[in-house]
Image 1 (cartoon, one colour):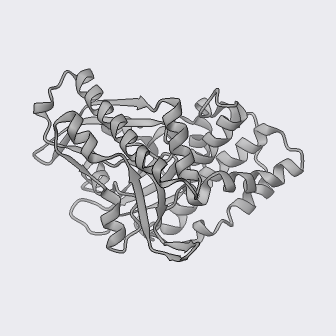
Image 2: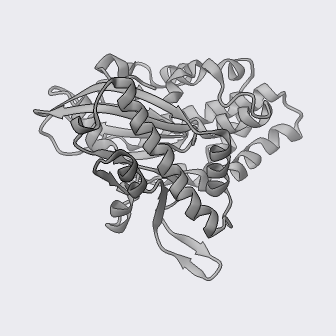
Image 3: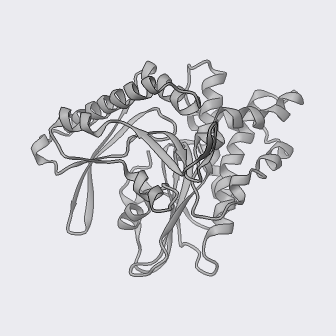
Length: 335
């Protein structure tokens, strides 16, 4: 799959048997710069041409097919050993609540690129895809999709567990003890999305993310700007809920940074404030949306944001004494 950051294709080779999943290999395949730029434009521009979208659907499918073949080659596995490929695709528009269009109301909908027919043709394998659309059609928000997988991987017999994914968007899964009902998941807000956009813009594309959170660590959080960000309407919505670039893309970044720039704040303060906001979105979700009286025994963290030490420090301090651990401790690399 490729997430909100649209930095490439993540591919995993997994053996599932007897109620157990074993990760055999995992690799990331970066998008070529031109393809990534076109995906980001399609995701960020309301007026993207249908011809462009049509071609991108094919091109992203080709990239996914090459990732699948590259994963198999790297793992030394033959295509004949694989039962099927599950392909999420690349989200370019996600409107779980619908909206207002030029000609009237927009229905709840979601759109992922990456033609499954292309993947099947190139690999010769069965491809299962278009996961989000059925959930939206049934009245769901279409995201996050992973709670059942999180339960399969991280469930404990004795206590609830929570899993936090720090991708472009952060999302939480609450996993009740084995055999209990109450599994649910939802998006918290931006994790890496605004941070990465700031870094890429500031460095004119030389860097795509804040390595280790070192740039944010040099700045000071602007508490006034942070308080304003925390009044974002998405944070006030109850689960189930999902979000994306539509709410936290380029326009959000400009609005978020405007007060700091008007005050002449150093650039590092901008990034420190964005990073603090990413952390606060998660803290708000944990404090307000988990079942009262049944807190998780631990919070497992995955996703690229786990490598951002400044973000993780904010989370650990804000969630103490809740143990915050890498998903790697349970056999799943955090990313």
